[in-house]
Length: 449
Image 1 (cartoon, rainbow, N blue to C red):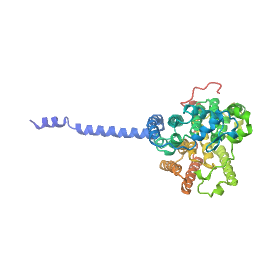
Image 2 (cartoon, helix red, strand yellow):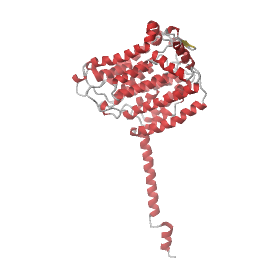
Image 3 (cartoon, helix red, strand yellow):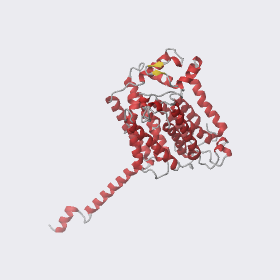
Image 4 (cartoon, rainbow, N blue to C red):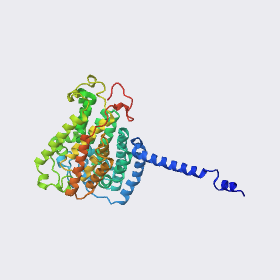
């Protein structure tokens, strides 16, 4: 046998093995690049969102089956709505085992439905699966927002979905009413992104009727309505919000209007120091002092004014121009990009959370799903990606420290301050692309709702 024949039988043509290795290396390199692109390019948010939602199906089922349920407010909710179902419409007479009914009328109707579905609140496992469905619906609505805004790298959503013990606990193991209010709010925001402002206002008002923390977004929503419609066409939208509150509350207003308003919208309500997450480092007498509450309210209002003048309103026109009909302003000044809508609403809500008189553990869902956007929305390199991940981790750690400590509360305020500074120093999201160009919207008609 000749040497040449032996070479051909062992390896084929000269250079074949090297070519195969080179091709394999190229395939591996391209695969790594594609994986990196999927994890970092916001264009792939939908793909990763679907994968994470499917993964969460298993996670939620495992949590419900394996982690013990903890009774906190569910029984109280059922007692409160049972009083209404038994014919008591005076809010001052509606009580649960943890205290009086302090939520607006929408809460009563929704939890009355849950009362019937869960066999007078006794079928806890069924209630948990209903809240699991609410959790998955919340993720779906949140991902739709992030798909449109295209600001957050997809790998961040691993932290938003699978890494939060506290949020899974709030939805699946505690059955608080906060998740119900938030899923309705995110539905409202999705409708606004689709330019359905009237429907958005309806569902926004419905969310307020479940829990009034949704009012933290009201300054931002009012600003956006004035941007989009001007003063005269904003008034009907505000009327929609108000009339829904009246319709839902009518049975209680007819019975005892003062009692309903005082109980369901009690802005002066005192919070228990033992449950505070954000002010543990203060002495209790300072925490409960009215001067401290007034100082926080002043700081909150000042923050809203500053953000309105310098972060939200950047068209170059006077803020008073928002009162005019949009047709009388500069061209396109009434058009809103999806990013501006989300930036205004999320920052308005975040300001309210930052200067809150007290944050309890279930309040985490008020802003948890907005944190990735707040950290990645501004065009600045002052806060690198690793620092943003660290902030998310510290916030999660602070909310998972029970009971809260001076250190956990201090860390939470430092993180909130860093986010506020980041939003203030960074360039707000692009405002040049009109809302009508976003994938969730329809082709605009001459008259919008």
